[in-house]
Length: 411
Image (cartoon, rainbow, N blue to C red; front, side, top):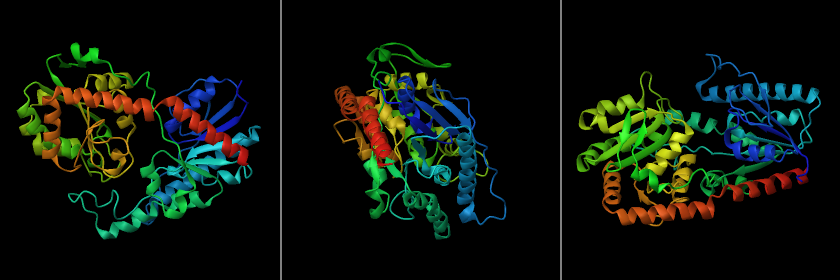
């Protein structure tokens, strides 16, 4: 029987990165679990959600370089006020676990000064050598550098506040200053291998998303991102499509993602999808290309299982969960030759690497895989083998629980 522990989780989008660990703790039926978040409709049985009031947008007079920090300070204030209400109702956690990215944990020590905090550190921003300036097509003017540096205000406060840190990959830890890295425990995140698994039978059956159908004779190219934007190489795959579609008449393409912007520059009007369709739309057969937007998780997993070639591109930034899930599903992945991807893909063993910003080379690598079914089969097997070795959910949860126990014991 698990020892009873009182947990407080904090993340603006419940359950965020904490889905698997919260679900596991709730299933043990021994713990008291409270989760502070913005309001949303998500639920996990056995978890008490407490919504905090979303702060207003920063005032118009705030200096542009300080707007993000202003919003984070207000968010910290709102979370601390909510936490104080939880404390007044008689709840005192044994540990507080949360994501530092939005400033929510900054004032939590003022509510429970003697409760240990385990904070998730996702990325440390740089004006050179990482994501900023990586793509010469979208240069940043030096006048924007102070705004990039200012994004680290919460990072730096979090690293100097009392508490412990964690991060999920060596690459993400490497973005932090030398003096900070030893303070960040590495807890590689895992995948549910029972859900994200190969299903070769899907390639032998008709596959459909809405009215868009893929026959067993067709080849399917897949691409997935939270939003269709340059940070995830959307402009690169779009420029590769004309050659790919012309070379393989049986090729169908499904590009999953919203039309907002999660990372990088926004348009005043319209979206990157509209922008790229204006550039290449007259050179692609729209009947063979589907943009389904954001889709249900079950549909997404089936799409990966049906995929003949899956493309994953990213600037030197945080690797998406979809990369882990594509490997677990046994996809033949063509990934960008960037540090976050190289931590997961070894070229020729469990995927292929391609220069992130080169549409012609991307098209060549995809066509090579479509032509060489034996190579694709070998990469699919390598992808699943990597997932079974490195990404098991049970391994992740065991490591995570050990870190939690260590932090609680440290007081």
